[in-house]
Structures are given as structure tokens and as C-alpha cells.
Image 1: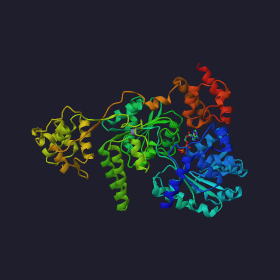
Image 2 (image 1 turned 135 degrees about the vertical axis):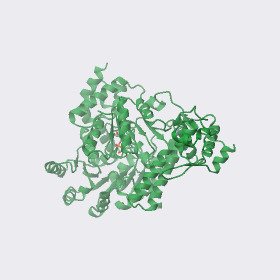
Image 3 (image 1 turned 45 degrees about the horizontal axis):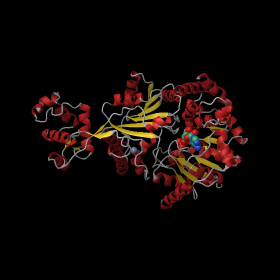
Image 4 (image 1 turned 180 degrees about the horizontal axis):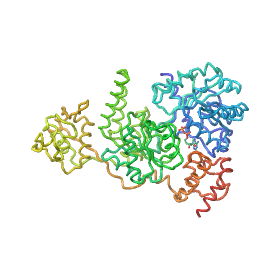
Length: 622
Ligand code: ADP
Ligand code: ZN
């Protein structure tokens, strides 16, 4: 563990020293991808691949991991094997590579015998630089023989955290990858993951038996993501408002339960948004259809439980909304990480309510009881949830908060990309007086009721229970009737979050006072309640900058062209060209093949293949 941490520290130093990519690497970059430079750590990862030194590469989603294992075999003129957990991911990658003229193939269970044999023949001819396989196929005698015949010398393990039970996506079939080192003693193994925790990293190195690996850990901060946390009031309306800021753009909404996903999707559809639900309770066919329609840009919003996302590689997701608190910061990082993989700005909004913390706790307890989960496992998931709650409720820069959680120091004083740094969170006027009113109401109802009843009394509702108990006679009855119920509820939960009020666990939680509550009521402790200041401007400065000089009408025409090409070829739109390429096209507006070749993302093959149609689209726009 210690050694690994030291290795990480050393490699960070090496990276800062930096270096220019060798010419043969640059030539491959230009030819297939039309890229001019490498991103941080890509060079080091590619060098490990070329030198065939074992490596563990940890980069955030969208960091550019795939390039790291795609470049070395193309430079060295060899065939490498990539282990990947999902057919959809393999297919997308192979499609995108082939469009770029890069010879690659996949072998998976979705192919029939004939197709498998054809691909095996091609592969045996040494025509491909990469073969993608699922872990269970890798270790079949048939594939082992093929790999031996090809003298495969390098294996890349994508989503390597799947090997670790401490990760968020453990797959037992990944465990067998431990055999690789004994089956191919001379080969190098290169593991890739976006999972940040040290425990998972160490586990990957140990399980795969990596020898003196180059450990390359990128920064986890995603500067292009704008993080906002808003109090959850009327969540459907709040979601619809957020989506409206991203009209016609791709978004994912995450919620806890299947029912929630369906309700939210239906509500959005009623508001004219092209949205669909996605959850584990749906038929596999229906799920696939939703995924395909999202990939084809036929729908813009998917409302999902966490089951959605692994198989989707759409890089132009501009917005990720959490309709409820995720159960850990790891999950939050993973889910928000699906936004803005193309490096362009994207917005992540979390609607927070302490009620969701209780909901998760109950879910965790119930599922632990059902599956006889050891107490310490339950305890640790509660701990992770608590960290997430703290992240959502602490008032500080969100980028700094996330960095700190993943053990990094965040350098910027103002990130310019979170609600706190943008000055969108403000204190409620007279917070302390408000808090005193709420707390004394809890005292008046003798600490025997839950949030709902206390809010009833404060807002002067005439519920059956209020009348039965004659609570309309209490001095606190109706003292906050000017505030909307949702706001009142939120204030009560803010007090709970701040530890100024207790809420008992269990099925029928009641509000109780503690010593801090009394300090507040006696005027010995000041309280700051928060509210979100609604931002008026549609785009932040960072978003604005990403659109600078971009002709937005042309951008939309190019998107349409991309959809057409995608439909003709039966591929997802994002596989054809990335948004970053389209925006550059819509700002540079090249009119010759030569100028077009200078656009990032236009490699040689793509230029020959799609260049004429792109130019036509640009010219038609004049
Ligand atoms: P990851 O696998 O780490 O999530 P990807 O490999 O899918 O990330 O890369 C994310 C995006 O960044 C892709 O659109 C890819 O084309 C782009 N990209 C990667 N490396 C570079 C580079 N050196 N220059 C420009 N774009 C890059
Ligand atoms: Zn910030």
C-alpha cells in the first residue's frame, strides 16, 4: 500500500516534468484521429504500452484512457488484446475506430458462429491492431490458442475496477484475469479505470499480479463540469426548469426508485421533452430500445436508476441531474462523470433533501436484513452515505470538496463552476428567528411528531390530526404561514442536517430537541439557513466561452448531418463525430478539404469518407 502510494507520488513528479510525444506517436495521432497533442498522462501511459511495462492508469471518465491502449499497437505494428466488460462499449469503440481507418475487431456473444470465425480469420492474419474481448471469452481454450498463435504481448484491461469487490461494479468473471500473468508470462498488462479509491487501486495491482507497474493517476477534477446543489422543493418542476436550459441537448436524470423514474419521465414528456425511463425492472428489449434511441438522438433525456450509463458512451451529455441524493460520493462522481466527456462544459445539478438520506438508510437496512449482510458492511455503506450528505450540505467550493474527498488538493480559489463560487447560495434573512420558531414548535408539540405534522402546525394547516389534538390552539400555530410548505419542510431538514434538531430513526421518525436546539432558542447560538438564489443568466461564463465564435445554427445543421450519417450506417451519432469537432467546424467554417483536415477530430480516413458532405453542409449554410 505504502509502496503504491509512493509510486503514485513519484509518477506525479515525472508527469510534471512533461515531455513531447515522439514523432511516430504524433503521426499515428494525426492519421487516425486528427489530434495534434496528447492530454496529461496519455504520453506516459502510451510509453508504458510501447515499452511493455505493466501499468495502472487511473483517469477520470472522459480523460482519454482509450487512446492510451489504441496508440501503442498502431505505432509498434502489433496486435494487442483489450478486455472490456460490455458488448455495447466494445461495439461503439470498434465502430468509431473503423470509421477512423484503424483496424480493430471485437469477439463477443452477440455474434453468430460464422461471424466469429470470420473475425478470427482476420485476426489471425495479423490485420488488426486491437481485438476486444469479454473476460469470459479471453480464457477459453480457443481464444488462448489464437492469442498464443498471434504472439500477443500486451493486454489492456478496461474498467479494471471490476476485478475488485471494493469497487462499485464488481464482476466475478474479472477475477479470472489473475491467470493472465501465468498464461502469458512475457506479456505486459495495462489496467485502466476511473475509480479513484486507493483500496481499489491496490487491489487491481495485486489481483492482476502487475510487476513494478507504472502507476499513473490523473487529476480527478473535471473543470468542465458545473456542480450545483439545490434544495429539493418541487422536484418535477425543478427538473423541468433545469432541462429547459439544455433544450435539444442530451441529459440524464438519476433517481432512486423505478417508480420515480417513470413519474419523472412522464412529467417531462407532458412538458414536451423527449424523455424516457430506464430501469432494471423493464424488459431487456425495452431497455435496449431506450438506449438505442438515446444514442441515435431520438430522445434527449433518460430518467434512470443507477443501472443506466455503463453501456452508454454518448460523449455530448450536457446535463446530469440527481433527483435524489446518490448513496456515495463515488457514485456521484461516477454518475456526474458521464456528463461532458467531450471536454465541453456540462451542468450537474443535485436536488438535495435530508428525507432522501433517511430513505437510503431504510433501504440499506432492509436490504442488509434480507441478504444477511455483515454489520460492518452495512456500517460502511452508511458511512459513505454520510460523506455524501456532508458534501451536499457543506457550504464550500464543490470542486474543492470533491478533490479533497479523493485526496487531492484543489488549487483554484474560485473554480467559476459551482454554485458556491458563482455566488448562487445565500443566507436566508432572519435565519435565527426562523429557526427559533421551528424549534419552539417542536417543543410545543412535545417532541412527539414528525416533520409533516410540525410543518402543518407552523403553516396553520387544518388537518384532521391538528383538529383532533387541538393543535390550532398552540402559540406556534400558523406563525410561518407566509412561507410555502416546501420551503418550511426544507428549513426543518436544514436544521436536522446542521445538528440543531434530531430526527429519530425508524419507520415513524419524530423530531426531538437536543442541547444545541436549546442554545438556539435561548439566543445563544446563531443559525444560517441557506436558499438558492435563482440564476438569471442562461449560461455561465465557462459555457459562454465554449460557444464563442460558434455559429449555433450551423452547429445544429451539422448535428443533423451527423444524425443522417449515423442512421445510414446503423451507428450511434456520437460514434461518427464528437460535439467538440462540430463546434470547431461551426466556428472555423472551413471551405476546402485542406482546411477541413486541420480540424481536431478529422483524421485522414474520416476526411476522405465524410469530408465532402461536411463541406457541402457548411457551404449550404452561407
Ligand atoms: P475515457 O475512456 O477515459 O472515459 P475516452 O477515451 O472515451 O475517455 O476519451 C474521451 C474523449 O476525449 C473522446 O471524445 C476522445 O476522442 C477525446 N480525446 C482523447 N484524447 C484526446 C486528445 N489527445 N486530444 C483531443 N481529444 C482527445
Ligand atoms: Zn467552486
